[in-house]
Image (cartoon, rainbow over all chains, first blue to last red; front, side, top):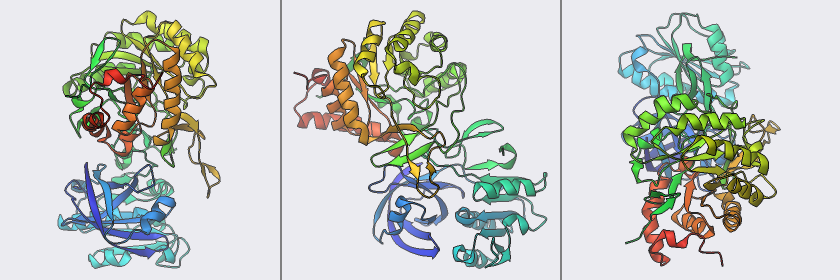
Length: 245
Length: 304
């Protein structure tokens, strides 16, 4: 973990309530896809945890959804703004487990960290396929960016207004070497039910956080191995360690 | 040369800055970030006789100038603290630590403290009779002078170390509780724990926190904490550890002027992991500006 001041380079809206900010600063603590950063905002006590969508060459790309007052303020920040970030938080995905044909599954704002993951997997010689699930066409983002990587992209929406109609669990391709998933809890739970028992997978979990670096125990979940902090022991957990009540 | 030293029941601290229980774990996360030996000491995560997972999530809500938590005393239990956390801590922290202990019955407090009493790494006990996040326990002891006294007596009977009782602000008369603890043999008073509060999610029309209510902390509560430290300092002869909303060297000095011998820093650690070393580094300069040569001299200095 590192604390660093970043400069906002540009910011744009990608879909309904979904924004991307690109920043420049010291990204040296971000070493694995699936990690996150915590942004301090003037006037707000707690930092905002945001997953890393991409990073490299001193630049950081973050995609977030406006869900409350803090993210609303974030979306109004202009180029040149300085932001204090804690970077390199969380464990990230295990690249070594991917095999040659991994499947990536993202739902809503769970999609962004899979972009950095896809880039790293390609670099390591794997051929990933990605399934992107959204509620409706107005919320779809980043499908073109994934296509531009030259990988197979399957888009689905719950209402059928873009891509295939259905949930990610309705459109899963068969025959992957490993599954990486990030999305809302109901999606991950449904995935766990749908994937074959033998399918090896890592799920990136989400919880409301206090500190983001393992001190406050605000985001603990119970796993088969006992209590774990989503921010510090996760957010990525092996599928077989998770409990679904 | 600014003198930052203070002493708690004969235990001399290099400075009065102490990360508060529940914001610092057992030190490990922060030892990765800086040399935690710069601290006066720290108060470890509230520990109970048996392991606890705590409350379901969401456990955290935000509020202007602060936050609300309902962690519910998640901890590995006293045995694991003795066999795993303390030995691990010994590798990176060479000072004594404050053992924060919670419980659900008088006997449980006593049993947990008895188990910890033999640990040389522990400088004093901070008995938490004030956690707002567990039902049928803890805060119940801190809202009744007789119950607080009973816990104090039971713990004093099983330990040779100083016993500080950590009080809840969620009472009508904190002075009567502090006095009851002093009369029962407490060596010091530690205050304040969090204020009971809540937030409601406007879209879901439901409380943000699954436990409905939680403990409100952060800079917004500083005036309440100062007021209670002031009141308790006037009422008891034993030392007071002040806490609640402290996030700067100026806040530390204000707390000491109100009557605190040492000062705990809580939520500030969660938003700025380097908050405590920054405060310690800042203290000599602020003391210089205010004409303070020794912190010891200003304890209770605002009282007539």
